[in-house]
Length: 321
Ligand code: SF4
Image (cartoon, rainbow, N blue to C red; front, side, top):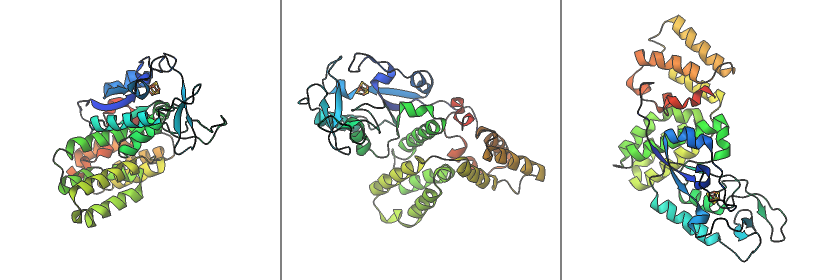
């Protein structure tokens, strides 16, 4: 429910140049005002510059991706005998191993080290090949597929921004509520609170993870359950929720109030949901009304749904989607 929440400080990795560190090949930075002025209220940023981390100087010769798009090498643009592929991969392994507390990572786009996707890859003759991922970023994502990762440029899109921040908070909840004393019971409790969140992002995922926990998980070692569950959950949550899927979720939640509210209140709620569905208001509008009545008439189960308040409302993210 929308009560006073203490804003947590969530550890999130970030490309150091986005925080204004002068670590780019030309001695400059790419400071992100959104990260610095808004997200730093709830994210405790942990900066990494893999190129500096492997011992390259600043300023330095630029590097680029060369070879196969799905397994490129990172070579100097002027001196192709400079090959920093393995050092960048080893640095990503070290960062993963030493920073298991990170709950997300924001990367700098287009970089042969940090770029998440659509980074230019060249053939050895210098002609452009298909695009790929930066070598450090690819290894980081491969090492921990559950970690929420996003590029800073994509955070300008309100839906992608809301999606990333939601995933960071869910992963933070997982680290805090399940991992310290892991058990199947805790995973089921965690799942139970995230059901409607999952439904908004992937109805198929909602059904699949429910079936898995009910029918298969008890036969498996807890380490396997933890690994499988969180990977699946984070993969499903990375699907964009749409007005259609949010509407469906809102209708399901409203179903919990049907017996307790009068016809006029029901009509008001339906109207607010319809206005949201037809693009006349943002998600915050029907949710505020729904939460108002859930506060009075909702069961503990429905009021515990993370979907209702996935992150501090001060971030205002649902005023834009
Ligand atoms: S994009 Fe990555 S490697 Fe390049 S300067 Fe920024 S942090 Fe360093």
